[in-house]
Image (cartoon, rainbow, N blue to C red; front, side):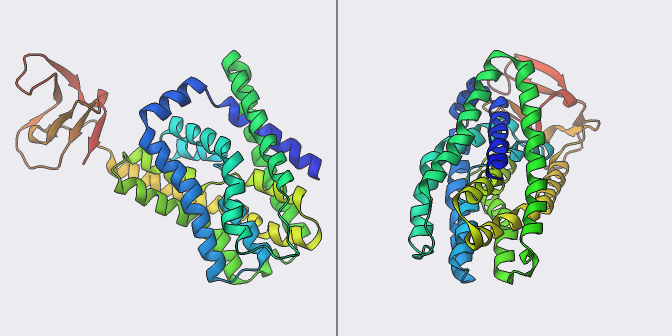
Amino acid sequence: LSIVLTLMLIFVGAGLGATIRYQDVLECLHEKRLAAGIGTLTQFGFMPAIAYMYARSFKLSDENATGLLLIASAPGGVTSNLLTYYANGDVTLSISMSAVTTILSFGVLPALIEIYIKSTFTSDDLDIPYEWIVISLLTLIVPCAIGVFVRSKSELWAKRLEKTGSYIGIIFLILALVWGIVSNEGLFDQVFGVWWSAATLQLIGGALSFGLAYAVGLPSRTQRTISLEAGVQNVTLIITLISNSFEGDQRTNVLIPALIYSVSYFWNSAIMVGIFRLITQMERVPTNSSVNLDQVKVDQSAGKVVVEEAKSEKTIDTVSVLSGRRKSASTASVPIQDLNIEKV
């Protein structure tokens, strides 16, 4: 089982790397430093803190608390990029954040274990095997680097590797769920605190991350991206780590929160994507209708036309995009449907 899980993690890591063009990541991180910083903060700040408060509030056992905190301390999952696409988010930012958090996890994950798990939930009978943490992270990061290299040499092979990694990731989740349910007959008999903590971790973390992104004034697409990236954890990494690190009843109890998180991941993701798609529909301006002249403003720094709510009987079917002052002679008449219009 350990060998199979490790091989699956290798393919998932390579598939993640195949989605990354390091030039795009560097450019994205340079241009969207605030968004990337907020995303990293929510990933490694909000999620472990929420799990810790859950574990303390519900008085979870050391094993259950350890499993919950390991899930919360994981880097972003590979499926977050796909969910971001479905939610009309910023896919480039999502991929960049997944790459950054995966690399940072090599140092951050052990630090979070020391801060949250070792300080409170580690008894004499529960030992954290750091060697397996390092091995598991290397098993993800090294193939990810190989995937990046393949992408730099061949787009065709990168696409093939990306699809293979995605399919294997989905198969892994399904097999892990089946195996977990079969081998843990008491999974659905767990106390309310365990189920609530693991099942709502993604939603609560995503909601708080969305709120922070909104509070600092990030664009709507970026808010959705950060929310999904923070809430969706790399459960493949954590299940592999737990399966290789613990034995017997300890492994069963530590694994339970990870399995519950995996079960709830499907409906939580559907809820989040559905809400974000609804928000997107509400934000859109109809492209086949006229726009009130008094509603139109040009945001030159963002390179877009902003349509404000205002009352005016004077309407136009095209918008004049100004260079410099509004009375400048340099104008260009552009069809509304060709413009990047945002409703405020």
